[in-house]
View 1 (cartoon, rainbow, N blue to C red):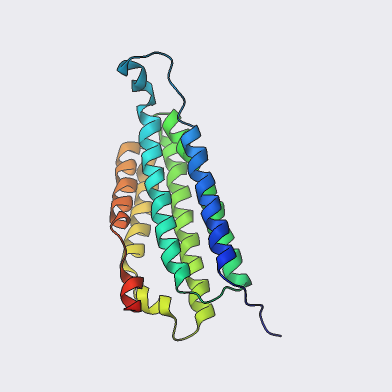
View 2: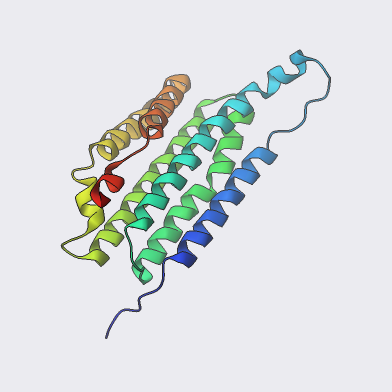
Length: 195
């Protein structure tokens, strides 16, 4: 029995739509303060900081997802489900972001935020593997990512941050920020394979 092959455009359009909604939900958590002075904004600072960090994460996923899907000529059911798995974890980011910001980076919300980031990273890796499996031995994506040191470093940092978040939430937050900074530098591996 042959596996159904599907064009990738619907997957890209659906994913883009979900990520746009995720960003919209996050920005709606930024409530207008009561008062008209700068001091009335002080209470919103943790919410705004968590929003900025999560916005950067969503932007990184959107950018890298676009490049990764570009390596596919078509997608199959395995890729579709792996993509939905990724979108599930990314769709939880507004909740964990809001909880962490509203509680001024308290230990438990900061822990859960890290768990959310870790599972989003794992689901991205599963999507990568699904694409590589579908492409076969000459996978463009496989050639592009190589040994994927950035992913390994990121996973280690997430796990470290989660482990310490219940005692040192601001240290955990600094590790989450550092991982974002690692990935905010555009990843040119896929573009280089196409040259």
